[in-house]
Length: 230
Image (cartoon, rainbow, N blue to C red):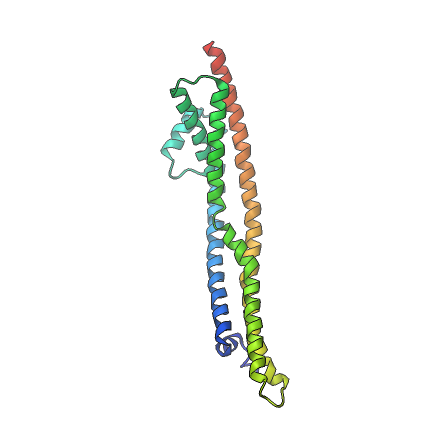
């Protein structure tokens, strides 16, 4: 019986509904693992680019120098650099329209940075909902396969005069494969989702902190320029 009850034989002898459920869950599991590895590398890249720009930002370079570098490096820039560039770009556009009121310039720059921040966070959070769905739905899909398989197993035993454990066990074991695969797909997805949610929260806090710090620097510069203009 030990040879008959290995997982491959159980799958081969399972009903077609259980086979479809298992194959579906295996496909979802492969897709979720692909998403997990892509997200790991994407978050590492985001953090590395943010750290690199933050070092440049606090290195003493002028805002115009940083903006020129961000404009040239637009395709390879990280979220923090793109947020900075959007604030500087809006500030320059307002100046080109002869707007010199520091409050109006600051509000425009902050709106542009907040809009850029939302776009960046949407990109960073992409595919996270897929992992959440896999983690929450897969066990129920597996359970459906198990229930169907058990129903199928007991229906097949209905005509037998004597039912023994040896006759019942294979059918139930075949059905339970679906639940096992469902958990196999769900557990890594849930763990990865929780980890990524924490990491993305850290990125979000870091970007929001940068927006506030850059806003303060920009406000001081505008105040100085306004005073010198008068």
